[in-house]
Amino acid sequence: MHHYKDGKMAMEDKFGRVTSMKDGVKMETRDGKVIVMSGNEVARLFMGKFKETRN
Image (tube, rainbow, N blue to C red; front, side):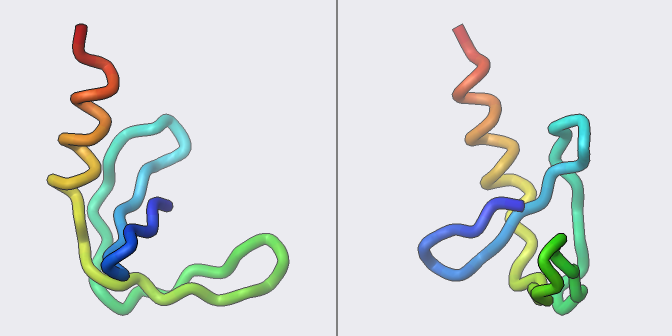
C-alpha cells in the first residue's frame, strides 16, 4: 500500500502490479491495526512506477 501526503492511497498486489480498491475498504495489518482505504490513486501509482522503470 502506498500512502501519499494528501491522504490518498494506492494499492499493489503481491506481484507489484497496481490494483484498484474501493473507497472505505478496511484492511488489517499483521500487527492487528485496521486501515481504511481513502481514495483510489491507481493512475498516480501507475505513472510513478512507469517513470521508475523507464530508460
